[in-house]
Length: 124
Image 1: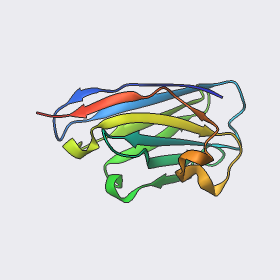
Image 2: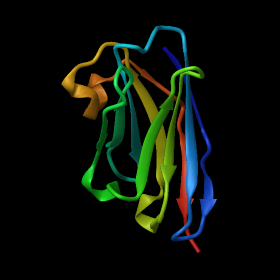
Image 3: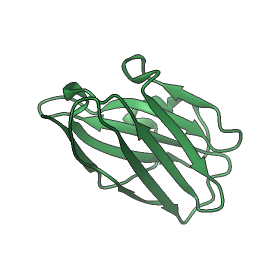
Image 4: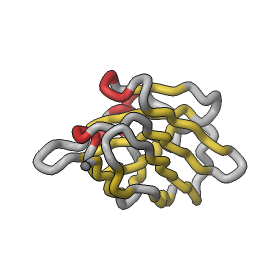
């Protein structure tokens, strides 16, 4: 699967951004799209995921209630709506694909493909 992640930028605290992850190549119908992020000096961490077959979603605790992951089957695109952004959300955000579902979609090693990343800066 080839992934193109876009939509990052500079936003003030409390603001919103919508990231996109366009997928092409392998069929994702049995897989998962996850978003990870990596802040300077930190390891890449899981943020959220969506199971393509039924739309089941998963969130890390720090973004629950603020971020929403969704998908558009026709466009084979996943979206990450980020609301109430905080300075600690500043990071490079990566989408990643798991072609066939496994419970390791929250780990970097569990993913098959990665986008190049898009930078999100939350600052006044």
